[in-house]
Image 1 (tube, helix red, strand yellow):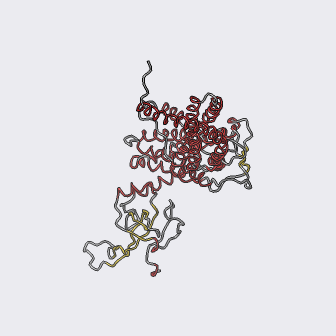
Image 2 (cartoon, one colour):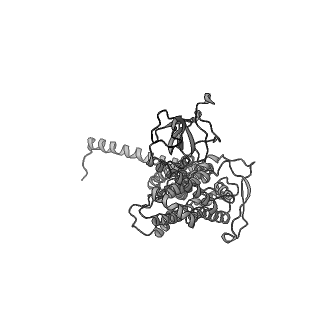
Image 3 (tube, rainbow, N blue to C red):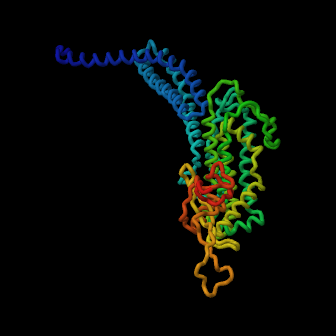
Length: 484
């Protein structure tokens, strides 16, 4: 039986069919436009990859992140187009093949993009960390292990370097021009030479005559004064090896045992156009120096309850320094690696160098220990004096109050020959020497300086170029310039 037509029902079903038809038309139209979008996005990927590579050549993390974001945006649009094509394929049998072909092209294109974007972001993060000087930390959840096991795990966690990326390796690259055997041999050589610096420092400290002289200093000040010698190498010498971009062929004496390749490495010549990467290279080198300095500074936390524990801490610090160097040189772009490798050939940091520095340090400590003691032939003891330099900074010096012999107008009845005169301070000072900055804490623990002298109101026997650097400067009596 056929029911009579219901005008209300017909109107309702008609209004429901209209949006569905419009949506179907919209989906088909979107799928057709997605075919064009997929082809346009795929055509633009080589240009975006080229931009990413150029950003990596600048060694600028912000530029790398920005160009990686462009590739990530392309990948996201390909995903959206893929979904639109699927909706179109479900609605139109006649165009299914075209929609499916476009889908396959989108899938083929976005697959590698995800890995490329993740790698680029990781490399940008590595450059930031390498420049920041922050040491990598093991996860807090990691179980406690032996020092050797900890170092091994830390090495395994260390990310690969920027120049380990095959897409960066090219003779025309400004960041990674070396061939793999050269790079690996140079890394091993540089890490070994940096480790040898700390080993020489430790060997010097363990020399018999120095070990005897160091014991009082270590008991009084812990490892800090001795560690400063190593820290100064890291934050001063190592951190400053990039003065200008190193270019052209460089002959570096890499031991044959490390590599069978000829130890001559070449960087793009001066005439080769490319980004100026001196600034990021400088930042990375400073970051390496800061990390090595932090490793050395950690040794100052060792308890000074037993001197032998401190000497064992010297060896442990040298070992950790070497392990850190091995990890961190992987983060150096090739020009920084070459500059450091070349500089290490002339590095002065042998055992004799550190033995001399330790001798100076101990000599300075012996002088500080004489504060407050009137020595034979002197009227006044050495005392600590703050010296204010022209830029407002101050530095601690050791000085002896100058005296003038005064007539004793009321000699005592029991006076001995010579008691007719007595020394009286005249407000001037004979400056003895600067206090080594690493010994400042020890000096201040003995005496709080009450005298403040200005740099410009002094007459110097040898005036230092930078008074804030550690110099052994002998000074004359301080007095106003008008009195001279």
